[in-house]
Structures are given as C-alpha cells and as structure tokens.
Length: 297
Image (cartoon, rainbow, N blue to C red; front, top):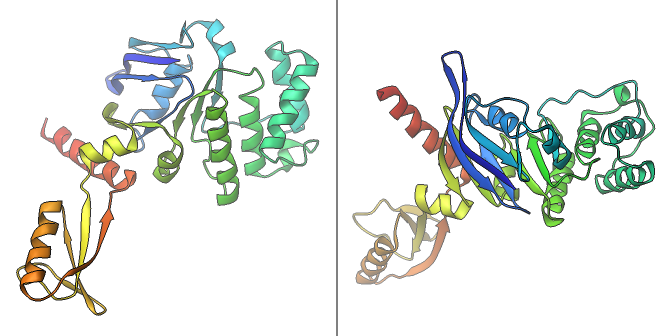
C-alpha cells in the first residue's frame, strides 16, 4: 500500500532524508523511530504528499504521493494538529466529511461509530473547552471521515495521559485488524514495540535498521542469560542472590561452562533467566554507533 524508493529531501545544503527505501503492506502497522532531527516527520510528509522529495519517489494505494487523488485514500495525523476551537466535535467532523463529499448519513454513522470506539464524550462542547486528549481523539476521527485505506500517524499519542494513550494505541491496533495500513511514528519506543508489525530506525536522515522487533533484536541486540547456581563459581563475575549465586553470560556455551564448574564443586544450576534487549536499548546503541561513524567521515 505504501512504497518509498530512495526518498531524499535536502533543504539547501542540509540532507533531512537520505535515500529512504521501504514498503508497508496492506493491514500492517509500520513504525518509524529515531531521535529528533532523524528525518521521521519529513519522511511522513513526503509520503502524505505534503513535501516534495528532492529525489526518489513514493506511492500510496497505487497513486503517486504528489497526485491530489491520492488524498482520498489517505488519512493524515500530524504531530501538532490545531482544531477549529469555536466548533464542536460533531460540527468539526461533519465539516471535514463535507470536504470529502461523504454523504451526510454515512458521515454521521462513521463519525459516531469512531467517537464511540475512542470513548469520546462531550461531543457538542466547543473544542476550545475540551482537554488535549479529547482534541487528539477528534483529530484521529478526522483522519477517518473519508474511510481511507492508508493512515499516516505522526506521534498519535503525543502528550497524552497513560489512559488516553492506551485508548489511542488500542484503536490503532483495531484499525490494522480492520485492514487499514498504518505508517506510525512515536518517540516512546515501548509504544512502537507494542503496536508495530515492523520497524525502521532512522538517524541523520538514513534508515540504519529495519525489520520486525525480533529480527532487529537478533541482528543488533545481545541476549543475556542470568544463571543462578547453588554454589559460587570461581573465575566468574558471581553475585550473591540470597542463598544462590548469579552469573550473567551472553551465550549458551557459557551457560554450559557455568553448569560444569558448579557441578565440579558439588553445586548445580537452579535457574536460568533470559533477558532480551528492548527496542529502546537497541535504538540507543545504533544511534551511538551511527553518530560515531558520522563523526569519522
């Protein structure tokens, strides 16, 4: 549903995005993460047809991203999304439905259904008088008034309280389950890890890693094994843990060595716990690595 081929955006001499290539399949949530200035928002805006690429191409639902007709298949939610504060939620959403020529009866059903799904109350209150969380929910429903196949969401849960954030993230999952294609960006990597089917990590305008979270873990992360023994093991960085002794190692061959050494001293392995790196830890390591490589150029 989304294809980006060697997308590049340069502002004067500054390369904001450098050769981004990726695909997002129908019914998939694809996350783009990276530090501030990595090129995430610029990439999303090129996909949404709001910024012209300096080079490369993007297609959305079979349309070139620059084709105005593409926007009928797209719902876009920017990180900052000011609303018309003198309007109510209902009147605001009906106004946008009219812009898309959605029949009144269809628009009303669609708007109310999505407001119900997001548990949004006070639908006839001025938008200037409602909370940030309610405004964000209205902006999300606005992205759906034309029933698009593709959604581009930039920080959909930005600045929201935990309860509202959970509503929004669960709603994004429901959209995926309903067959929508979602391109998703967020600073909170736990959110990305919990909702995205695949992820691209950007730094300095480049994609430095991509794949499912397990694939990224396997390629870039290090799994640790914390081995608990009944007796201390010499020549290992053993830590006391109650009546047990703990050693952290990085592969199963090391676990076997700890088992053998414990047995030689009349002990045994009583527990083994696996710890996989989080997406945030991998992201920080990759960012530091690419920063270091960039500094050497």
